[in-house]
Length: 229
Image (cartoon, rainbow, N blue to C red; front, side):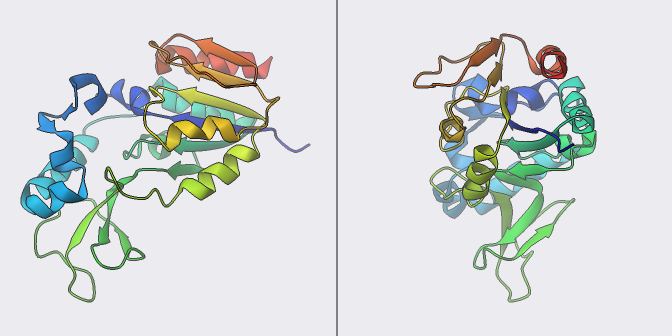
């Protein structure tokens, strides 16, 4: 029997429980920096060294944190469902927990790419500095989708969402578009579950919606029980 497809959109809330800070909680500051200084093309052109150092620090931090029960429970659901994770997070905690189908909307901390050739993307675990270049001598940059840049994975995310039998949203304020708009690509009769301690109000949905007003480590196990019933 074919497994039902569960699509899960995850945001900063699930990673915050592992100790990764989010800029949404700090009034636009991300680890003490104005987010536009470190997460926009303008910030990059103004001060490349600052931006590189910022992501080097985030990469170091990632080596010090672990997935939490929210991540692990989503991975365990693969035993019963065809689980696809679409994440706004740039960490690899879903993969560390064992999830096998993870699509990163906003890029990945452990990859870098060429500033000139968008197809040139490589794995990167250590510091990235000025002078680190691709095979044609172009400077490498973090493989992160910055504010004002296109989201290359969006079409794939829409296609996955359209095939969902169940759709869950975990730990996101639903304020960041285009990710927040994915909800509107679900088939109108499939159940949507929304797990967040401070859930946003969702308008314009014809789907049956169940809000689980908990954080990820509490709410994802509740979701699992509901789905397995």
